[in-house]
Image (cartoon, rainbow, N blue to C red; front, side, top):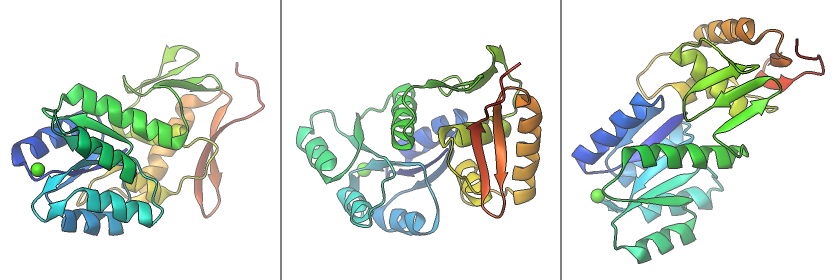
Length: 226
Ligand code: CA
């Protein structure tokens, strides 16, 4: 999952980016509204962490622009402890949640995961598709309760496909979800991860189907698990 962090405080921006990367998110970090708009115009993100007090204006402008365009990606705003009005205004404008500074990194991660799940229509941090179970907080997958041995990238592909189960996910979407700007990941590499994942979940009744010319779809087949 890929996050855009918009924060002009270098210490906080760096700390949040490092913490999110450490927990498996792809992260791009910008320090102002103009850069944020530029990134949102050209890249795909799964959620935004948005500071309100920015050097070139207030963060509300970003939320407003997104919602006017009809973009539904989740926005988590950062506010000061006593700034009730900021939070109310942010939520009224279409932000999805807020987190109070100083930011507790574990809380930031948990709130982002919850927002991304909610926007994808997946309820809980642990969910199952057939015999396959994903624990998104622990970044682990299980097949009939047995833990699967997955690399970080394989987990990333599986998490994205499972969170968007029964929907078509393109290779480009997977690349965008797994990499920040400047990181390379080829379509061939995505194909290789999917190939390996298929081997690992074989026989589970859950399959990664190729939708010719469009991408992949993770779904449960009628075939009984054995
Ligand atoms: Ca600020």
